Image 1: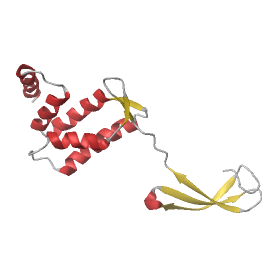
Image 2 (image 1 turned 90 degrees about the vertical axis):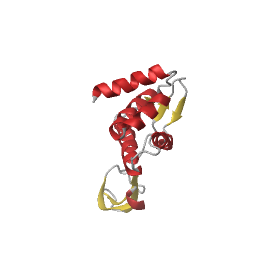
Image 3 (image 1 turned 180 degrees about the horizontal axis):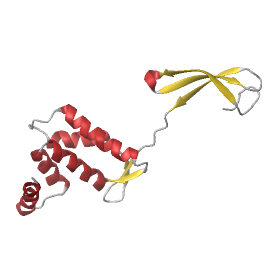
Image 4 (image 1 turned 180 degrees about the vertical axis):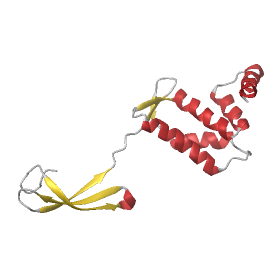
Length: 151
């Protein structure tokens, strides 16, 4: 860390403590050249996740959209809000941890279907029917048949 007084490139940390509910770290430093003290703050730099949609347009990942989709699929089903939040957290963390700046909407949709299938099969079929745009009852029945085969 460059000293603001003498521009020397090295300093030592005297004290560190979290601020802003753990979002930042305040550090008291001492310049190794002139001995003067100064304060620095560290913050986590988060990179927004960009979703590439089917029409190739791009938008910032919106967690609320995913939660909303899960809520619609799980309506009148025995799935708690905590379970939905946990599933959405898992999806969001999965893509954030990949360290890629862009993710396709289809990758998010497929992972969402996996999570819903584990939560509730009816919710899974509801979500799949919208996500995969079932055009007729035959396509719907094929998806249900796949579901029954895997069990």
